[in-house]
Image (cartoon, rainbow, N blue to C red):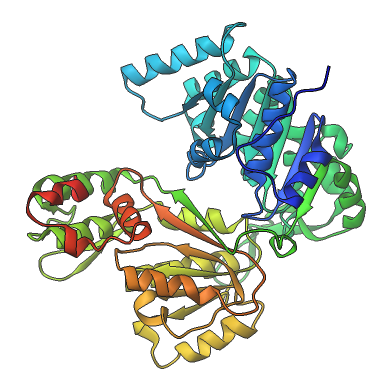
Length: 499
């Protein structure tokens, strides 16, 4: 009898099929595939064929908060028609109400039923270590049946001493039948982060039973004295303490040879069979202060800031912009003064860029965003790592553009579409991130083209940072469908866009 063949809804590209062939049947495997080369699809196709062959039943996906929900759409896009009908999917939500929690318990019961359907649990890694019920439930799900467990953006377990790594590697991994890690690359600036990622797969890949033996093998260490205390005259009061610090690395070729049989590596520049534009969304969770301000603005067209000032919008489009500003972490009061609001958006941008090694354009809607993003990027990647192109640097932005185009250390162009959206050629960028994006069809269309150009063979990815369930989703919907909000928002129709 011929073996059943898993037929995904979309045929894999050549490099994706190559990855599938290499990982077939392996219990532990690392997909070190650069952003937008399709490691999510490869993982889903791998799960699908193993489920069809009866080797596994369930799929557990663990990812950062801004990423894990994107797997809902990926499952719809890449599963076979048959498995899509049979698979029961549940996406974890922190703070679930009674009804949602009851539905989750029913899902776990179905997963534990030997005659139940195949199930997929999508959960954010933060919840598993901060909410005991989430962590316990993930273990319960993994124990219920043979499974594929995939850790997306696996650098989240790159810190050997973190609570996240201790939970995943110490408590969860033993219940994961087939283990997969997905990352844009093993972090080249810190090879030490590889240890715990590979430990999740199988400690025998590296052959080190502890992080310290791994560090001793591949890191160059030296002793350093810190916390020395002196008086005003410079006399030593406390000799301080000795610590070991890493000053370099050694035998990295040997390390790569150990990993190679258990991994697949692919750069975006090597994947010429990919489409020229690839769109995705990165979700941003609102802070409590943002949720309060947003809710009040939406309901009452006004909200009181914690400082006592009021911000009001009497026109719907103006209100939508005020809502959008709150989502971005700032707003203007009635006297015209700007106020900063605590936000998670900048942290989500930095987390996104951790998986990326090339040059990127970050588009911002507001001058405040440009300044905040550049400050965060230079804090993370060093002075000079980000160039600016906005209304506030008219006299120097040509020089900054030249740095972005010619200096390999200048990896990021942070710009507003109003200033840099036209007439610029930034083809050296292979990633475009919309940190914030208003509903301006012309600005969006023009800004997307800055990374394109004649003769370019590298695929370009476009990522929108979006707070789910907010006006930001409406903006993106309007842009994708070429809807001019100013033309359609009238009469009672405004409720469709704001509420």
